[in-house]
Image 1 (cartoon, rainbow, N blue to C red):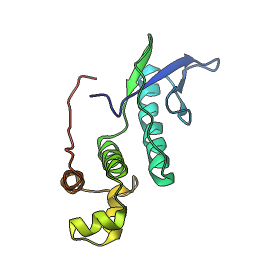
Image 2 (image 1 turned 180 degrees about the horizontal axis):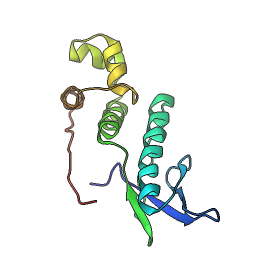
Image 3 (image 1 turned 30 degrees about the horizontal axis):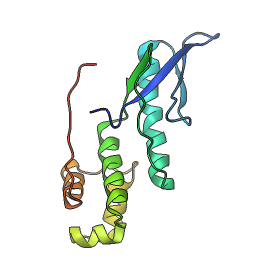
Length: 143
Protein backbone atom coordinates (compact mmCIF):
# COMPACT_ATOMS: atom_id res chain seq x y z
CA UNK A 1 0.00 0.00 0.00
CA UNK A 2 2.54 2.57 -1.06
CA UNK A 3 0.43 4.52 -3.58
CA UNK A 4 1.21 7.79 -1.81
CA UNK A 5 4.68 6.95 -0.52
CA UNK A 6 7.62 8.11 -2.59
CA UNK A 7 11.29 7.28 -2.31
CA UNK A 8 13.54 10.13 -1.27
CA UNK A 9 17.30 10.34 -1.33
CA UNK A 10 19.29 12.05 1.40
CA UNK A 11 22.60 13.53 0.30
CA UNK A 12 25.11 14.95 2.78
CA UNK A 13 25.46 18.69 2.44
CA UNK A 14 28.81 20.48 2.59
CA UNK A 15 27.27 22.86 5.12
CA UNK A 16 26.09 19.96 7.29
CA UNK A 17 22.82 18.13 7.33
CA UNK A 18 21.16 16.56 4.31
CA UNK A 19 19.62 17.68 1.04
CA UNK A 20 16.49 15.68 0.14
CA UNK A 21 15.37 14.93 -3.42
CA UNK A 22 12.80 12.62 -5.00
CA UNK A 23 13.12 10.91 -8.41
CA UNK A 24 9.37 10.70 -8.93
CA UNK A 25 8.55 14.22 -7.72
CA UNK A 26 11.30 16.45 -9.17
CA UNK A 27 9.74 19.52 -7.52
CA UNK A 28 10.58 18.07 -4.11
CA UNK A 29 13.84 19.54 -2.89
CA UNK A 30 14.39 20.34 0.76
CA UNK A 31 16.93 19.89 3.53
CA UNK A 32 17.24 18.97 7.17
CA UNK A 33 19.80 19.26 9.93
CA UNK A 34 19.97 15.51 10.57
CA UNK A 35 18.38 12.40 9.05
CA UNK A 36 15.19 12.61 11.13
CA UNK A 37 14.72 16.31 10.42
CA UNK A 38 15.41 15.74 6.72
CA UNK A 39 12.69 13.09 6.53
CA UNK A 40 10.23 15.34 8.38
CA UNK A 41 11.06 18.17 5.99
CA UNK A 42 10.57 15.76 3.07
CA UNK A 43 7.03 14.94 4.27
CA UNK A 44 6.26 18.65 4.59
CA UNK A 45 7.67 19.39 1.12
CA UNK A 46 5.71 16.45 -0.30
CA UNK A 47 2.56 17.99 1.17
CA UNK A 48 3.22 21.13 -0.88
CA UNK A 49 4.05 19.16 -4.03
CA UNK A 50 0.76 17.25 -3.70
CA UNK A 51 -1.06 20.57 -3.25
CA UNK A 52 0.53 21.93 -6.42
CA UNK A 53 -0.42 18.82 -8.40
CA UNK A 54 -4.05 19.04 -7.27
CA UNK A 55 -4.35 22.80 -7.82
CA UNK A 56 -2.70 22.65 -11.24
CA UNK A 57 -4.53 19.49 -12.37
CA UNK A 58 -1.36 17.41 -12.71
CA UNK A 59 -1.50 13.62 -12.66
CA UNK A 60 0.34 11.94 -9.80
CA UNK A 61 3.19 9.70 -10.96
CA UNK A 62 3.28 6.09 -9.84
CA UNK A 63 5.85 5.72 -7.04
CA UNK A 64 9.03 3.90 -8.01
CA UNK A 65 10.42 1.15 -5.81
CA UNK A 66 12.87 2.44 -3.27
CA UNK A 67 16.48 1.94 -4.19
CA UNK A 68 19.18 1.13 -1.72
CA UNK A 69 19.66 3.91 0.82
CA UNK A 70 16.44 5.64 -0.13
CA UNK A 71 13.62 6.24 2.34
CA UNK A 72 9.87 5.99 1.79
CA UNK A 73 8.04 9.18 2.74
CA UNK A 74 4.38 10.17 2.61
CA UNK A 75 2.65 13.51 3.21
CA UNK A 76 0.17 13.96 6.09
CA UNK A 77 -2.87 11.66 6.15
CA UNK A 78 -5.37 14.42 5.28
CA UNK A 79 -3.35 15.27 2.18
CA UNK A 80 -3.34 11.61 1.17
CA UNK A 81 -7.13 11.45 1.56
CA UNK A 82 -7.59 14.55 -0.58
CA UNK A 83 -5.17 13.20 -3.20
CA UNK A 84 -7.13 9.92 -3.24
CA UNK A 85 -10.35 11.86 -3.92
CA UNK A 86 -8.60 13.87 -6.64
CA UNK A 87 -7.39 10.67 -8.33
CA UNK A 88 -10.77 8.95 -7.97
CA UNK A 89 -12.47 11.92 -9.63
CA UNK A 90 -9.97 11.90 -12.50
CA UNK A 91 -10.42 8.16 -12.99
CA UNK A 92 -14.21 8.51 -12.98
CA UNK A 93 -14.05 11.47 -15.35
CA UNK A 94 -16.34 13.44 -13.04
CA UNK A 95 -16.30 17.19 -12.47
CA UNK A 96 -16.55 19.00 -9.16
CA UNK A 97 -20.04 20.13 -10.10
CA UNK A 98 -21.15 16.57 -10.90
CA UNK A 99 -19.74 15.24 -7.61
CA UNK A 100 -21.42 18.07 -5.71
CA UNK A 101 -24.75 17.09 -7.25
CA UNK A 102 -24.24 13.45 -6.20
CA UNK A 103 -23.32 14.55 -2.66
CA UNK A 104 -26.26 16.96 -2.53
CA UNK A 105 -24.02 19.92 -1.70
CA UNK A 106 -22.84 23.15 -3.28
CA UNK A 107 -19.85 22.88 -5.61
CA UNK A 108 -17.75 25.01 -3.25
CA UNK A 109 -17.87 22.18 -0.69
CA UNK A 110 -16.28 19.82 -3.22
CA UNK A 111 -13.65 22.46 -3.97
CA UNK A 112 -12.90 22.54 -0.22
CA UNK A 113 -12.67 18.74 -0.08
CA UNK A 114 -9.97 18.99 -2.75
CA UNK A 115 -8.24 22.05 -1.30
CA UNK A 116 -5.07 20.81 0.42
CA UNK A 117 -4.97 23.94 2.57
CA UNK A 118 -8.55 23.60 3.86
CA UNK A 119 -9.27 21.37 6.84
CA UNK A 120 -11.82 18.77 5.74
CA UNK A 121 -13.40 15.98 7.76
CA UNK A 122 -12.15 12.54 6.80
CA UNK A 123 -15.62 10.90 6.79
CA UNK A 124 -16.80 13.44 4.19
CA UNK A 125 -13.80 12.72 1.94
CA UNK A 126 -14.38 8.97 2.35
CA UNK A 127 -18.07 9.44 1.46
CA UNK A 128 -17.16 11.30 -1.73
CA UNK A 129 -14.67 8.60 -2.70
CA UNK A 130 -17.30 5.94 -2.02
CA UNK A 131 -19.74 7.67 -4.38
CA UNK A 132 -17.06 7.25 -7.05
CA UNK A 133 -17.02 3.48 -6.52
CA UNK A 134 -13.82 3.32 -4.50
CA UNK A 135 -12.90 2.96 -0.85
CA UNK A 136 -10.47 5.04 1.16
CA UNK A 137 -8.08 2.74 3.04
CA UNK A 138 -5.92 3.82 5.94
CA UNK A 139 -2.92 1.73 6.95
CA UNK A 140 -0.60 1.65 9.92
CA UNK A 141 3.12 1.06 9.78
CA UNK A 142 6.07 1.58 12.10
CA UNK A 143 8.18 4.72 11.73
